[in-house]
Image (cartoon, rainbow, N blue to C red; front, side):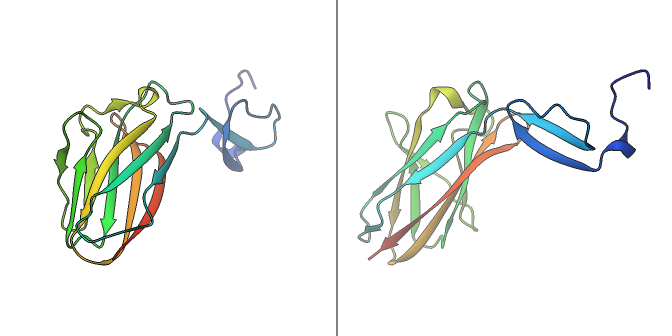
Length: 156
């Protein structure tokens, strides 16, 4: 009664809000978050076998413009796939795990989300088929997933 502390038995529900939470005492604990980050994948729908495909990961910082992040992803199926990080001046090979998982953007150092509008990857597929690429934007410090996107490509 002497403070504005919400007691745990007063909380009936929790809700994440962006911007200012409503100012009412209704048993809801509002968790205020910055505007969400965004991520989308731009990739050609169809390419030929062994023809490199440019994969552009378009990023929006939202309220996380000063956050250091990296990209974590998975490509399926993984057989016959090679990826390069083409965001710098010289493309660098990206190591794929047995399950098709990969990391781009240096998981220990990352890059500042507000400084990058897009991130470039290049994929080469040596086997015909339908492939799916899922990418998450992850904070370096806490491992929080800020945004994710999925893209598909058909290799003929």
